[in-house]
Amino acid sequence: MMNRKQCFIVFVLACMLSSTLFAQSEKQRQLELRRQQVLKELKQANALLFSNKKKEKSVITLIEDLNYKVKARQDLIRITNDQANYLTREINTNQKQITELRAQLQELKDDYAAMIVKSYKSKSEQSKVMFLLSSENFKQAYKRVQYIRQYREYQREQAEEIKAKTQQLQELNIKLTHQKAEKQKLIEENKIAKRQLENELKEREALMATIKADVSKYTLEIKKKQQEADRIDKEIDRLIKEAIAESNKKAGNATSTGKFILTPAAKRLAADFESNKGKLGWPVSRGVIKTKFGTHPSPIDRSVLERSYGIKIATEKNAKVKAVFNGEVSKIMLIKNANPVVMIRHGNYLTVYKNLSKIYVKSGQTIVTGQEIGEVFTNPRTGESMLGFDVYKEDKTQNPENWLAKF
Image 1 (cartoon, rainbow, N blue to C red):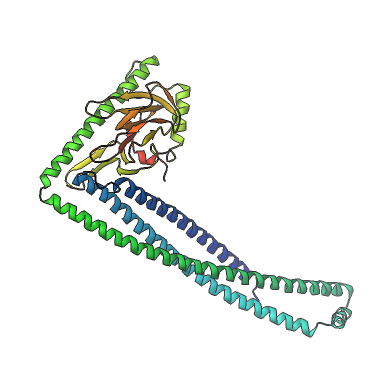
Image 2: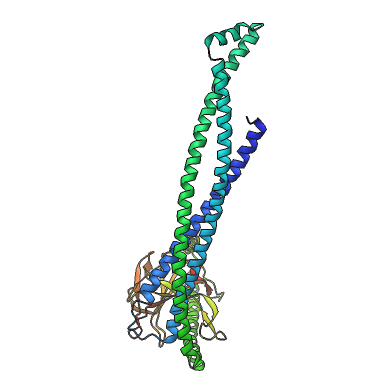
């Protein structure tokens, strides 16, 4: 029978184990959410990037599309491996707990059996009466009555504890069976994902082989594409600075600070926008981020750097573009040799929507979250529908991915 110190140690260990199991389960939940997100991204990539094979996409675009899918597939494999590893740890922990529970249950049953034998030997009411009558005084008799009651209560508690431990053991065995089945399912899914990845890598290698025959030609194409993107971004940057100056002039401050002079209402709007960082809805209903924010080496020629002030989202044909937050249309930008751009102001923040074919709004118009502001341009030759999306604080670029909600 365990003494108080042993019971306390068992209780502390149980609490520690419970805390560890909770942390592991939460980690598993987060991994599963991320895995489902990647699966959704892959499904959308197949629908948006690979469904129309009749269109004449350039080799560079095809490689970019494959790179996206390869990266997503590698993420999926890594996450699934992490899930399987965590499940292995949970299975080992549960198996250890089952072994300990069985030992505790056996000890409880042995103690309980000994108590039953002892109770049987002294079960008659005559024995209990004689036990009380043999007391030397009233105080001792009272204590013996208390002892009989406590002994009965302890028997009842032992029976309840055996019942609870038995149930806990059964539940753990069921959980263990489910965990093993879940782990096996993840392993099988990873085998399929690895085979798909091998095929995609082979396809990419074949495309890269065609490029190697004339790398300089494709490098020149990438540089021209980057120069055109830089031209548009610089013009947007200039127009943003111009919009800040115009706004401040209207507010009665002609000093060029590079920052918006905010009214109390504009300050509240900016604070609301900022508080929704990481929770903003996407500017299109379906899409995958093909071009990320910042500077990255080209997948075709690693010596060539590609820069992006925002992100490019591949979406469906003639997709409707939605405002990601309440605000006001600051400018409709018509840039030479480029498709229209809409800029929406949210206090001292700006969201910019590039490569539109149609515009549904006008300058100065108040906009609400989710309102349709236009359509994405779809390239008739390649079938690509690519929305450029930027986020600015004053005239400084932000990473839009940090602002948009995860799928």
